[in-house]
Length: 369
Ligand SMILES: C[S@@+](CC[C@H](N)C(=O)[O-])C[C@H]1O[C@@H](n2cnc3c(N)ncnc32)[C@H](O)[C@@H]1O
Image (cartoon, rainbow, N blue to C red; front, side, top):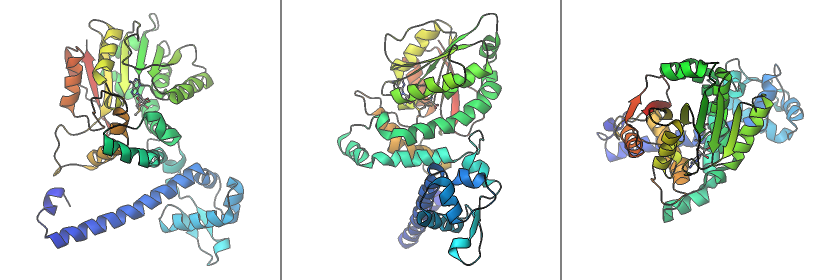
């Protein structure tokens, strides 16, 4: 039922609707935490590698306690995540990961891979006491405090888009840049700002084998992972990573192209970052920004699931991360197009165009310096 229709209900009916909604959400929340356990404890991977398993077999394969494993398996069957061959005896019931669910839960390269989103949701609430303080005193929660689940959740969610879509679907929407990156006679230099664990930089280097990519991020743990990943893929000669605040006035260099994926809204000073990117590409240069695909205006009567998801991230993660530094623009995840245009213009860009790239999460802006 749309929000607008809810206003026609009586107070009793509205109360009943909210009870139903919160009851369902509470079940869903617990089931989400159960998926987190299945992912992190290796249950899904072990089930994907076997035909079916009893609780004893699965516990042995994952080095976990049989009693907990049995309860988790029963919960998973009840939630419809696993199929069960029910013998009527708890110890001999055999569980199977149904075809279709294996891709969603274990295939790291699939666009349907959902466990990173689950990890991210768990990571977002891991800082709850600090988040409550931030709400009370107006401060923030630093990005590193959200820990490994958040870092890896973001990395793995975005990685599948980078490795599947960046070179083949996104960059062709910038024909001149695409051509430049493909030019093997004059290897292009690319700056990837707020690169996180580096998968966008790596996807650029893999998709355009002549390019040299420098990734910058202020988060030390992310840069450490990015550096190790590039080395493990043999890309260390063409892809480098550096711990660096994007707004640092000393960030210098000459680049053919600069990009920033899903990070401008997280920054305390987005204008300083955009100005730095403009400097890096020089007069007439091009910058690509991908950030959340939210509606152009706030309208609670038409808000869809993406808008709800983005507001969820905003209150639990992005706004407090952006508010951890002071002064802060206090942007939050729901950075509407006009807000972004304002930042880009303040940073001195002459032109801001929205690119015709299909993506349910992100909108792509081409900025001309
Ligand atoms: C949501 S993550 C996105 C990471 C990566 N671009 C991706 O798409 O996976 C936002 C990133 O912005 C980085 N970040 C935030 N403020 C920054 C700043 N001032 N300078 C550099 N990086 C920053 C964070 O450390 C984090 O890695």
